[in-house]
Amino acid sequence: MSIIKTVEQELLKMINELGYDLEKVTLMVSGRKELGDYQINDAMQLAKKHGKNPREIATDIVTVLEKDNRFTNVNIAGPGFINLSLSEEFLVDSMNQINEDIYSNIDKVEPKKIMMDYGGANIAKTLHVGHIRSANIGEALKRLAKALGHEVIADVHFGDIGRQSGMVIYEIKERYPDLEFFNENYEGDYNTLELSITEADLEEIYPMASIKAKEDENVMEQVVTITKDLEEGHKGYSALWNKIKELSIKDISKVYDRLNTEFDLLEGEMDCYPYIPKMLEYFEKNNYLRESEGAKVIDVIREDDNSPMPPLIIIKSNGATVYGTRDLATIYSRQERFKPDEYWYVTDIRQSLYFEQVFRAAHKTKLVSNDTIFEFLGFGTMNGSDGKPFKTRDGGVMSLKELISLVKEETNKRINTDIVAEDKREETAEIIAISTLKYADLIPFRGTDYIFDISKFAELEGKTAPYLLYSTVRMKSLLEKSKELKQENFIKINNTDDREVLLTLLQLSTILNKSLETKSLNDIADYVYRLTSAYNKFYAGNRILTCEDKELQESWLVLTKVVYTTNNLLLDILGMKVPEKM
Image (cartoon, rainbow, N blue to C red; front, top):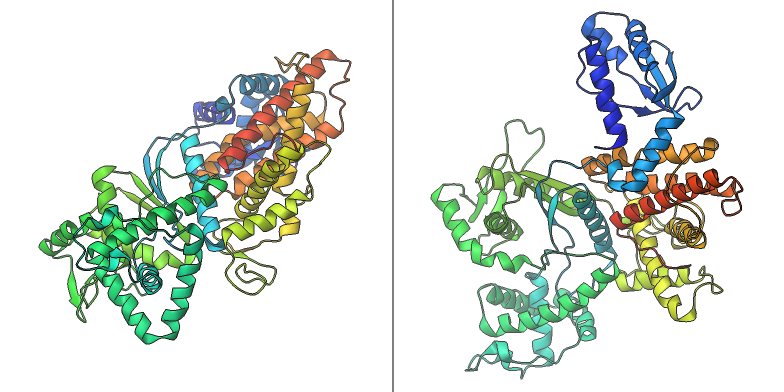
């Protein structure tokens, strides 16, 4: 249990022993430091319950708190707000506890098995800027959940079937009609055939096919036919598509690797296909499907709905499956293999209605138990300076590779070439660029749109990744320079600057648990900035290496070590790496 959580539990016991019935005590960080570090606002709630004046109740509580050597400056403000500060002795003890084990400052949660679905890349298409938020937010939420004790299984869930598959196969057939994949009379094993297409070819094939299909109805008809044949198991197309998938996944994975985004499963929509017949048979047997204009649907409307809730289409009038079919079959598959307690889907906020339909259908058809939790974690868009989704200069959709290159070019300008060796410059620029993208993406609440300004987010000052990375690198450098000096115990507090750093460190657990509860990373992104800024203010006002008071010097070095360790923990949760030098 974290330090602050422990104090809150003991405060609760004290208050209950006074005869006041309270379920929880929360130490609120005070906005008025002259009154105290924290505020307790429970006297008003207790006054209503016990029929007493809130200030009278606050006085009873304060009488007990004043006898506890962990607290100082205990006072009452207004109608019954209790203010208090933590004593120097308590802060010193807390600092040594955190220095010994940083996880003593973190509250773990009751562990659950969570299936996370994020990524959503489409096979044979280049990853573009629209994919970055899913990767960044999903990866950070996964790391946060694991850090707080959950078991997490992350699936990229590729879009590996649908219109784009028909378009790519059509275009390859146009260019290379003599490939054996298209020979209906081929008697060998299609899967052993070679395909001499490169990743660069793929980047060009889909856009070309898409243009042709939009401009020519005949081409679109052929694409639809190929897609249907592929879904129905056409041997030549299936073997060809598997080759394309292998090539595309290799290329996509390289970009995800650059984004420090890792998946436990590299599965796609087609992986659910073996489960579809069994699931549909189960739906039919239990009368979950009804016919609607030739299609088969599941009604998901509820009596308490205040807005329209259309049924979820399962089988189209032409007999084809749709996204809903495949998403439910994927849930069916995951239930059989993993039995998760919760499902988290990280995707564009505009898909909220669709996923609500899917979640309701999964519960209604009993694919999952009633207590299985589904979370739709929608996100807004990354926009350019014009407030519209980020584009290339000519108005096209920007690839993630191109975006990373642009940011890398900007961050490269700010690298100190006197410190970073020439052979490390490329690697350093890459680390800073990826962190710049991630921090800019995670600072806003995930559900909001935001404007991505490359030059602004690449600055070394302000609420930016380079500021955080540079500060953390400087902490490491200080610790290395002072490795011959004693760094074992935190002994004493000097002034309000180092005290403020200690108090900020004690907020760690509250911030992490709030972020997990809201499923957003903005609180962590803001907190690591506040902690770093508090440390930098302290650092600027004290000459640590030349301090003549050895007890104070040791305390400052321990403080530096704890902030450095905390920063690394938080930056890792956000999916950011720290360069050796910059």
